[in-house]
Length: 214
Image 1 (cartoon, one colour):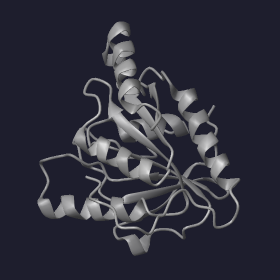
Image 2 (spheres, one colour):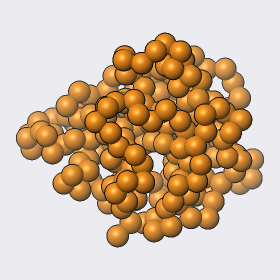
Image 3 (tube, one colour):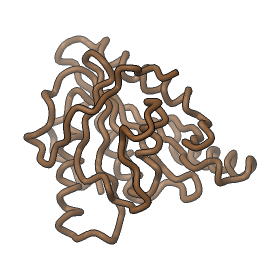
């Protein structure tokens, strides 16, 4: 059973001024367009089609907000790194993600990475930003069911070596449900820790200018 039985879609934002009020606690999901982000969200929330999935990468073009109950939310960020879209759309996605990452409600980032490919340049840039902002990151190595047990273990070990103390990491597979419970536990821990902060206490300086995250 999901930790988040009240999960439901709230709204989508095409521009930063359409974001929900910057209060409460949010866990954001980010990753390359073909890393399996929507499937991971649906598995974590025990919903089949809450986050729309597609065989065509780059379908998530908005910042999508989901309630998890109370002041807790999940935010689905646009996928990045997909070359078959216009530069204008890529720039729009970049603007949305950069604006979102400055929210004080951000409790942590789940970075979705295809376990067969490992961390990419866009993933590393997001990690650098989050490290500077003291924003917790949990790396989800998806599609682990497509690897042998030894290959999956090697992928996890390699990711953890590269990440060091910048992020935690786990293997995950939406079809086989591998890693679903640890992901839910990690999400709840991030949300609960953030809501326990004193008013005005935010992770890092969210107003400074940052280099491109994509």
